Length: 227
Picture: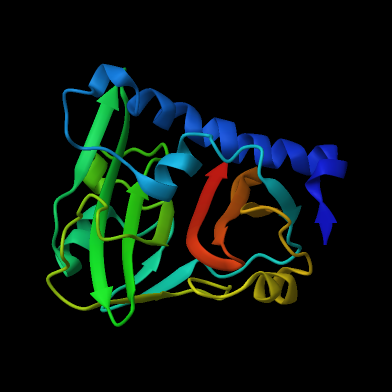
């Protein structure tokens, strides 16, 4: 495990994930669109808005499968569309478009046991889709929420806790160190990976964790393919 603070090549990966992806979203979240009630909030707004760009960052050497089990639907980043997620779990697809750039998302509220949480599915990558609903999901986030948080949609069928091959909600900083070989020293940490894809494309993965009192209370997973 190597800190990206010391490796310029890996720093460029983080810069892309933090700035390149966020460039579209920063515009779409601008005050010019304040007339609309639709908005990204919570951890997604921090990550996609570039506000976690200064988080402590590490590289993980082996990419993980981006197939995410959400109960009734197995979601593959950059393949499963927002329409497909909605067809399974219901809800309303929200979107914003400025100067031809768009981002769409679904947000679900879950209250099972002692873990009230929110799950976001966001499509913010460039694609040939004509509408945000037809875009593939490139970003998934789950986070604990308080009772006074803005409400999201209630899924029409059971939306299981996201099953990821990495530490998730309620896990500890020690679990992150065991999985990635480096423990976070701040409340926000990013683990990143890049690998060569098909046709000379580069596949970039980024995991951003938010910790509270030493335990994970938010996680965001992004995968994008770029030249």
